Image 1 (tube, rainbow, N blue to C red):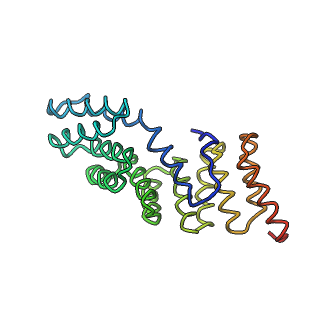
Image 2: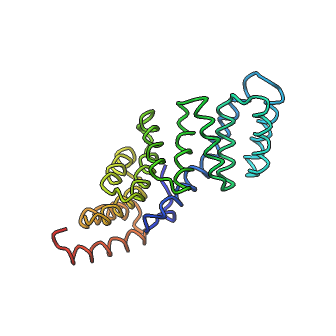
Image 3: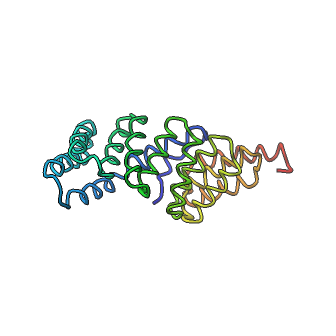
Length: 236
């Protein structure tokens, strides 16, 4: 899935603004599908009622109401990983990252292979500035499924926030290998290379962004900045 260029950013410490868009806003159909799976089975009728209610509120972006419904569902069945996950999803939409993290942890305790819970756990940690823990979390994700380009991108962005630029570039490379048109990964790859003084390689990354979207003004400006830096340091 491509990311609109208006979400490209220039300053590396701000990269996690994109995360809010990517995994806390766009997965709404994914969360609903998971809830539909829960409600399609048997079990306590009150549990199913409140899950369905939470689905309804989620669809209408009434996250406080959705949270209340999911809490009621959990009171009838606290062993359902999906409801804990979606409680975390609602909390994340409400900006309550610490509480969201706790809910994702409950989902993972029930289902240690819940990839979506692990991904969103990492996002919550990143929003809290806990980048090393976010990297560790996304390491768990790629151990379960190494083919999610966004996870490699998130991992690279967290590493960049930790000034671990060489590792960040390697992680962006993984994202790009899966999705060669992943413009924002190319862009932040260029940023990481620039931060590590590899200006020619940074320019090549920005060129990739411009090839994908010729109207990307941020990439053009960053390319010019990298050219000026390379002129000052010809060996790089």
